[in-house]
Length: 406
Ligand code: ADP
Ligand code: MG
Image (cartoon, rainbow, N blue to C red):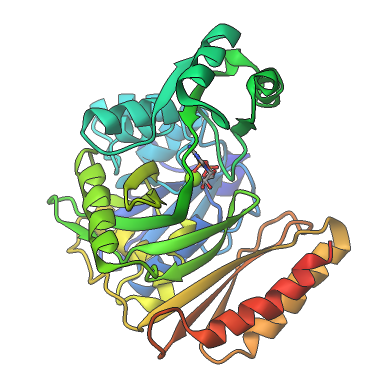
């Protein structure tokens, strides 16, 4: 199928696509979701050519990519053929065949960030081991292989107990909470059993969830974006407030943790560092994504250089751009068509229509091929100062009304 779309191609393929833009490098992106789509938008500004690889022919990025290849980013042969055609390979999702990428790197394929980083990050347990070994504060965690070990961690950490699958987790799918010893087995079954590879985290009673996007250039330059607060709804990033309404010392602490975490990783690109803020002012690392992140959508409108442009600059080897905000504050709503079928679609459309008349608001329609699950990101910048602008809070209220109707 990918052959059909590509119309064949030369064996090394690199000279197949004429390049006239800011860089001769063809950037191959594994994955074609909304993050890939937004990478393509940033790329078009500088005439950077992006090739995407995604199993869906009509994935969100497909319409904007310079060239879209239909195929699985988790299949070794497909990734190999794809990578050979690119000047540099990067990801917009971490669940790719990283083992193949590592082999390709040894053969001279340029992968940014490094395949070893992607491989380590895609296993959340190895990620936690890595960061704790590098002296980065994380919540207590432990691998579990059977019921006995799970119950041991319950004794050690107390309840509720956060049980997580090591791999292929997103949007909270991959997490299950046991509120007591009796609930461990059902939580484990919900995650697919011990064979799936599980680990346990101590419950963190955070007061806020924060996120820092960090860009790192090929020369090692590191630049942090403003710390933002993320509010999740059903484990999905729902609201992002930029900058986070936290004391300066917490912002500084968050940046320090994020910078230290990214310094311990290899390769160029942007990384999203998800953090927990506890009531005693501790900042703990939750997880890192080796790619642009939903918590950084607002950077498109609110920062001098968006996280997407920064990622492209980084992987190509251009100088990094200024990540600072050009408005005092911004807020992002990630709107999901929460209802199944027609109703959910209509609701998302209504919300988008309402957002279109809000001064300063920008609407980003993800264009997910599944029409029953539309997603819109609405980003607002404001002239008003922190705490986050009151008008945006008013808008939140109006958005929240229809969300109560399910
Ligand atoms: P995902 O890959 O789905 O983003 P996360 O590990 O980030 O998975 O967990 C999703 C959400 O679950 C987090 O954003 C946070 O709200 C909550 N969470 C995760 N780990 C813990 C924990 N140890 N204690 C309390 N809440 C947690
Ligand atoms: Mg997360």
